[in-house]
Image (cartoon, rainbow, N blue to C red; front, side, top):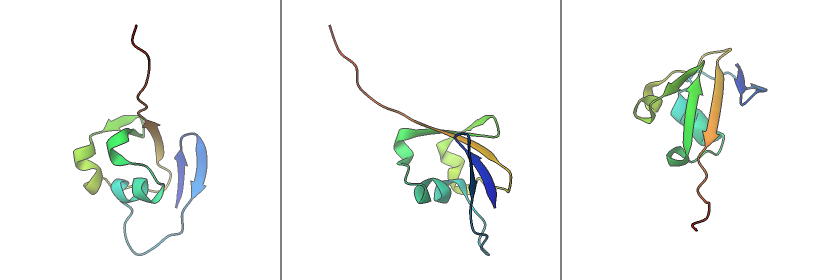
Amino acid sequence: MKLKINGENKTFVDSNEELLLEGLLENLGYKPQLVVVELNGEIINPKVWISTKIKNGDCLEVVTIVGGGSYS
């Protein structure tokens, strides 16, 4: 399966199991509570990650939320 993730082409070995967004994010090492995911131009609600199927050719943008800043 070929995907584009954050602008990079990635290839994943096909298996008999379907690839779900939640599992893909875990395999890529993302912490679910700290990311926002866009799949093919649409932001995906974290509540549906467990049932969102990833297909060959999909394009994902994964944005990590980073805290910080200063108070004056």
